[in-house]
Amino acid sequence: MRSPDSIPSTPHHPAPRVIAVASGKGGVGKTSVSINLAAALVNAGQRTLLLDTDLGLANVDVMLGLSPRFTLADVFAGRCELRDTVLEGPNGLMIVPAASGKRHMTELTPQQHVGLVHAFSELDLPIDTMVVDNAAGLADGVLTFCQAAQEVVVVVCDEPASVTDAYALIKVLSRERGVARVQVLANQVQHPVEGKQLFDKLERVTSRFLDVTLNYLGAIPRDEWLRRAVQRQESVVDAFPSSPSALAFRDIGRRSRQWQSPAAPRGHVEFFIERLIGTPANSPTRSAAA
Ligand SMILES: Nc1ncnc2c1ncn2[C@@H]1O[C@H](COP(=O)(O)OP(=O)(O)OP(=O)(O)O)[C@@H](O)[C@H]1O
Ligand SMILES: [Mg+2]
Image (cartoon, rainbow, N blue to C red):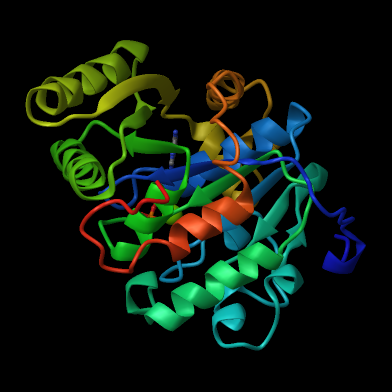
């Protein structure tokens, strides 16, 4: 692994897309989705940064077998710059790790939010896409990252709590954070039909009660190869590229590249940050920056 210092930086890069991955319920596969979507994008030639915002349980670095020198927690503590945390993972995937067992995003003070925001403004790396892996639940930090991203991917699986919690997340994103479009990704499906059925179930309630458009992004099968990849601390996309889940992730990656790119300057990392700054931590409505 190369040191972060060796990652080239050129100022004034074009605006990256920001994709936030969230779920409501824990353990449905957000981190697996984030890692593999990022890996699929990298393999397709996209310069990709994977940001782990889950300060409760560090996942991304553990799942990829990385040993961060600094993490996001060090940035909050003022011990380093965000740039110092950037690791280079497989095939040039850039990763900003969170920290194990450190305090949760919800416990960050508004000053620390602003600290993160400033740190991102200073991060000047060539990035096409930034994938943000979020903690489970509806914590303010999760909502803020989803609000600031152009695309929110909500991961669901076939458990009643997963669908209700996804609905609760979409409801608060729509009503309180002005999110108008959500991509729904079914994970751990036993059969492709199951994913569409989950989507239809969610769509029936959202279309009735919420002013939000749901898009069906597709389904990732429950796949023993993915579990083996986790044990090997690799993405399944890299470890077992012809496995059913790797093929599905590549397909999702392809589809995500076709999402209509947002009108400039929305999506620029600096703008991502401005949107975060422009939003008071507990603002019930989307700020003018949205
Ligand atoms: N498609 C899949 N097939 C098989 N196993 C899967 C699949 N997706 C996720 N898993 C397994 O489920 C477990 C939980 O996945 P993951 O950590 O990605 O969930 P999460 O939503 O990020 O959890 P948390 O809410 O704790 O952050 C992991 O052990 C992973 O190996
Ligand atoms: Mg996770």
